[in-house]
Structures are given as C-alpha cells and as structure tokens.
Length: 304
Image 1 (cartoon, one colour):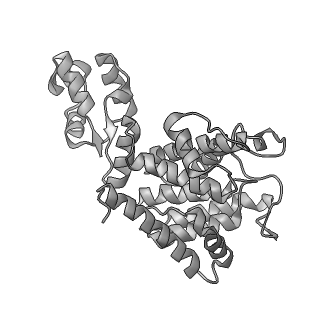
Image 2 (cartoon, rainbow, N blue to C red; image 1 turned 30 degrees about the vertical axis):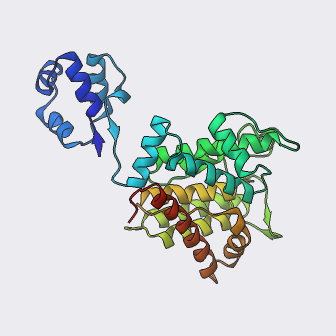
C-alpha cells in the first residue's frame, strides 16, 4: 500500500485541493481516486505533480507494508531510531554472520562500529573485518529496501557486490565482485558447482522458487540450502545466502531466522546433510527463528 500523507501535506501548504490539482495538471479523476485508495501512481504522474509542487517525486509518497516486522524496520531505519528492532538486527545478524565466516570482531566491537561509526581499538583488528562489517550493515539496508521485490539474480549479485567491494579479495584480478565465480571452489574438501554451470543452475533455482503460489519457512530453508550447494560466488556465499533468507522471510511475512555463531557446527552439518537429512538444518533455522521471536516479544512487535 502507498501512503500519500506527504502529498496531502504539500497540497495543504500550497493551498490546493486534489480536485484543483487535477484540473490544473489535467489529471484524471481516476488518478485522484488512486491517491485516495493508496494505489500506486505512475512515475510520470508523480513527477508531474512534484514539478508543480516544487519538490522531488520521492517526497510525495511512501510504501506501507502490511508486514509489521518489515514496516518497523523501515520506519526505524528512516528515523535513525536507536535501540529498536532495526538496531538490534543490524548488530546481531552482522556479528553472527561475519563471525561464522571467520571475522575476529566481537559482538561488542560490531556494536561499536554500528553505533559510533568508529573503529574499535585493540590488537589484531583486521581492515577487512571492519570493512565487511560496515558492508554487511549496508547489505541489510538493501534487503529492507528491496524486501517486497521478487528475488532475482540482479538482487543476489548486488548483495555480493555490497559485501565484497573494496576488500582485499576485490583487488584480485580473478575475483568477480558482484558476479558469479570464475574459478572452482571447495567446501569441506568437496567441489561445488563448476563456474560454467552456475548461471544455468541459479536461473533454474529461482524459476522454481518464484513459481510457488505461496512460500513457507521450509521453502526458504530449502532455497538457502540449494543456494549454498551451488555456491555461486568465489567467496561470501554464506553471508549472501543468509541475507537472501532474511529478504524472503520479510517478503512473505515470515519471522526471519538468525543463525548464531554458537550454532555454527550444527548449521554446517545441516547444510552438508541436505537433502538426505533435512531435520538438522530445519531445527537450526527454527531455533534461529525463536531467537528473533524473543527479540520481537521483548520489543512488543506483532509477529503472530
């Protein structure tokens, strides 16, 4: 749903009614009815109204989600609210997701970077750990902004670019930042999908997933497992995969799951056993969902 509250405020400030605006700009009564119903206007119409009111088109409306978790995240992100769901999700997911992949930063150091935008003091703080922490904050922002869009390869590649640009990996001539891998890679001594096969397998994965009429948590867990088995990027697959899962939970009004570093062993085991044994990975994800539910209950955010 679209909220035209900002447009109504602009009209009031200009001393105009919707009817007067329509007559002046030659806008149809049907368009005015769309505004009243909260339906989306065309970009051309919004730009026409914005030009008359002397403001940017983006200032005239905002999208309102019927998912209270997503709307809370968007509102708190926009307002820069400290101590809420947006703040805690950023810190907790970034710390755990990066730590699973080997970051040496503690949760306290991660929180310090988010809250103060300063680099923590201490021996052995790696530049890439700090960069990838900041990048992960921005990747979560991107997930929140695109949460209700269909999942595409473009979105997935953009997440990889946000995470890995400017790191030491990005300086390697063969490391494809924001694109699928160019070299074979191994996980636990096992070769993942060959580079030349990745585009076909990713396309098929998304076609099957996006064709579903309704999506459950189990469908998102399956998407995550299959993505990790394809392992489409040279590095960063775990973090991208968990961000995709966050996006899809928000898109389908499902409470997200947060994989904690302490559960890393069971998480990796669950991925390795998929699809022969699905219970372990499912249990880890359900446990991660309970973690988020406790946070939502503490913050009194609707999720049932």
